Length: 351
Ligand code: DAH
Image (cartoon, helix red, strand yellow):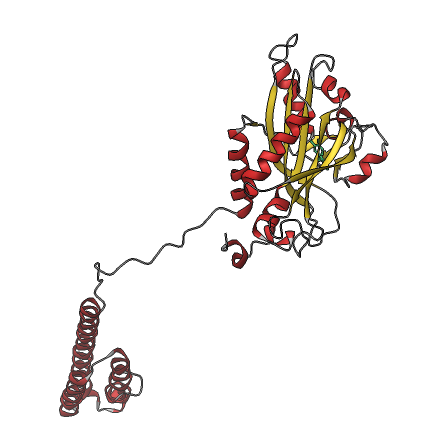
């Protein structure tokens, strides 16, 4: 039995020397130290031995087991070290490789066109005035000469936020940037109430309408409002300003046209069009009839001037407002307003 144990150890040691990887090592462990390995069978057969032989055989079996276990651990560690060395030499980091290019973002087409407009109006002396998107009925409508129940309100389907307990003055999402006119005039007039300073501002920002969404209508869009108030401001100042904007946006040959219209907060009121830069006014797929409708404008209504703190006997003013996406659509030939907020990179990456 003792010879058998010596032989078991020799065979196992030899086999271990052949082991080259983790899988083979595990197989070796099962074969030579596992429950049905020859060594373990020696342990199970101890009871069948004559009593006086048991201690010697048992002791030897234990020694062999310890020796094999130690050899197993050593081999396992050696394999691990070898694998590590291999990984270190083969997977060496090449710090001289060029880096991965960083994907650079870009400005949203909406931001681009807004900045272009800011630049155009800055050169004409307009400052940017921002005001809130959550408004009261009073500012969004009443102070702009839309009385409660006035049919002109129907042009602007409104999202109401809170009506309860607020009577005729519910909270709403602004339907246009025009309420900013009142905020701005009041703020600027307060600087010198007896002699309010002149105003020359643009008011950009998001507006919200409860619209049926289609290629030309969204429930949110940017407007750019303009307001100039001072002594002797005339309709020709308005025409000159918008004609100049059109030339700076669409080129020196861009022509503008005014059509009589109605807005409660201007008198007289006009819609303004720009001659199509694609077809030069002949009519094409972009414009239809040769002219592109841009927005509304007019001379600030005396009631609105007074609500802003300006005496209509001493001051006049012009105002205009248009959809920023409209301009971007015309300028870049974008056929559908829904692209702007869809967050589709295939669209955004073109700008
Ligand atoms: N606020 C109007 C709208 O959203 C547009 C507008 C028309 C603004 C005439 C003006 C203006 O300042 O004078 O439909």
